[in-house]
Length: 81
Image (cartoon, rainbow, N blue to C red; front, side):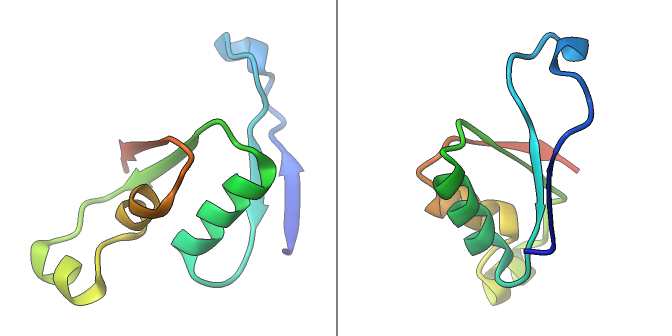
């Protein structure tokens, strides 16, 4: 892991009661996201998806967001990127 920190934005600013964390890691993106969330005891994973075409999805096995949804035990919120 290269960098790890807590968001500098105040949760009160948005009415949230929690902390967002940011981490930079190298490797298989979906695997790293799922593993990190489990290790940290995350309540939710929020991930952006840009929507790839069906041919690309078939050849690559789906995008990162779909792989995270498929393999995560933590709830996942997918937003349009």
